[in-house]
Amino acid sequence: MTAKIIRLDQYRGGIKHAGIVFPQVYRATGYSWTFADPITQTDLIPDTRYFHGPFYVLDDTDRGTLSNAKFEPIDRLDPSVDRGWVIVRHHPSEVLMDGYLRGYWDMRVIGFDQNLGAIVYRTKNGIFTCVHREAMPNKPDHLLIFIGRGVVQRGRFSGLEVDNVEVIDPLGKDLDDSIFAEYDEEEDEHDLP
Image 1 (cartoon, rainbow, N blue to C red):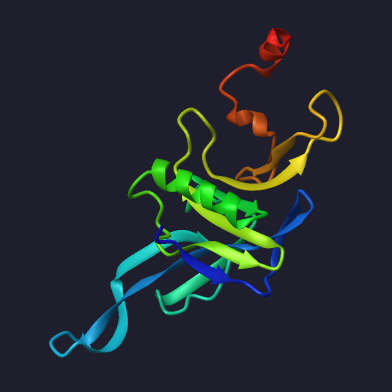
Image 2: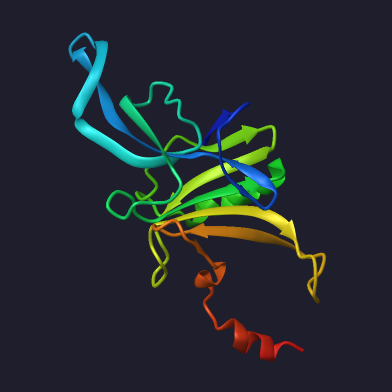
């Protein structure tokens, strides 16, 4: 995998979900770099002909990738600027993160994810990934999604480890994760033994 890994010893918290404080999500934009003298290839200067972004990161330090970099903390996506889904997932272990990234690289839409750099962030609270992907067909667009693992507390699935999903729409409202379902959950319950 080619993902750059960023270590975040301290980070600004954006949301608390599933008992985890997730890092703040930033919308990043900026420009390319070019050489002041293309022949000798010396003196890098901003190349304002080539705008990049938005892409989404969990750290507001660019480390030189963009010129005139701008990082805007966001708590929801703006349909006038953003498209698709931004998914921030907490991984309690390296093994779970590795499996997730292998699946991501197998299924990602080439050319859509504009953050070609870091998508993995190591923190004292675990590992986080930040993925920007196209919205699924016939599903809402412009969603900010946070995912953490949890255990079902009651009922017949008590003790089962599941993904706890927090979905935030462009108005900042929480949506139920049933919006991702491909079937009617009530019908499915009647079919269970």
